[in-house]
Image 1 (cartoon, rainbow, N blue to C red):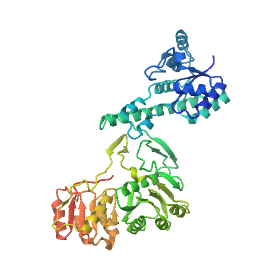
Image 2 (cartoon, one colour):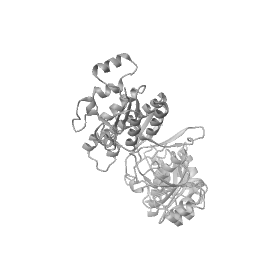
Image 3 (cartoon, rainbow, N blue to C red):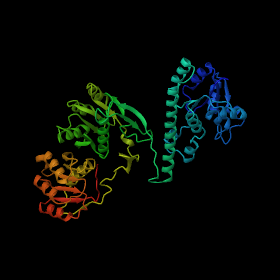
Image 4 (tube, rainbow, N blue to C red):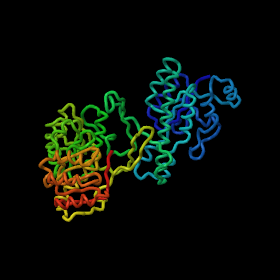
Length: 511
């Protein structure tokens, strides 16, 4: 009895050549619909599935292969007499190899303005059923879902006359990963369309983008995965123009820089080290913004990552080339800028589309034995109800400085304090166990520049010691959350020193 292969694919790349090789090896080819027509048109001898089942396609092709003549052939244990006797009684022949890929549901829902009906019609039923059946029975059946595996399967068939148990098991595992991901896209889409929040179960799926040399430290293994339907405004979907592959820490720092710079409308440059900004500058041009970011902390920026929200031009590239940087991210690089920066062997140059950062995504944080899920922190000062609670009102310059500091402090690890003027950060205190400790770091870094500057806090002041420290350094304006039972102490202290204070009612913890 000749072996039989069932082929039914949506993505037809390479399938004709694969079927031709199978036919040369003595396989009978079974197929359906468009795949059958393509193979026949290219000279492959094909038996239609309807000829095997004795049943035509019905319901506009929704039912083709859901039949015992197909699934009995896929699920039978070929060395078990009881199974063989039942197949003979029913006139069913075994199927030895299955090649199936699925309706393009993922690509369908990625289309702008896709209709719900079109999405549902692209939910494959027969394909996953055949794949799962064949994968379950991989002790006897070879199942292929990825065209990249065609060559390897043919190679083993030619060399050994059969596909090894090891490869069959690997291919089966790939099938279940594939169908699990496929179902995840469907469940996510239908959950979103139904407006359901915090469902009883979530299944999320990512595709491997690259293997990484190591993780956060050399002894940790790591890889980088991306969401194929995720935001294009992301490091996961960035285009790399120059430099070696990104490392684990590069990716995390680059993402941090991107999240900060997108909050600015004016030209901005953000320098990041170890997930925290070390300098943020704004200006009339990218080169002016970068100069401010550099001046904010010219020591910490060394070996850092810089993100721009404007295209990098020649003048900016000349500045960047003067120092060692790991990565530069921007919407674009001019040809002159690329010519300058690509002379530096170790710098990575990435572009991301800044016009596509409005897509809503959840944040997932792994904890031992579980997963935390939350919305992204998209709250801005435009959403807040600002209250001036001191005797003195802020000047226009102080308002501008507070807004700059507030945009940045949102992205600094808590407890966080940022000192800034209208165009740049002057001092950043990050990740301290107490708020006044963070303030002392930021104020010390700012030094004399703190005189006349503004200070932002990511949460309320539990007592008035931070205001006292700010006053001693020369701070004239403070923006903070408010809501402490001792707010009045901080307000009183601000009034004593002539400091204007604005409460936002919004906390920006970042852990």
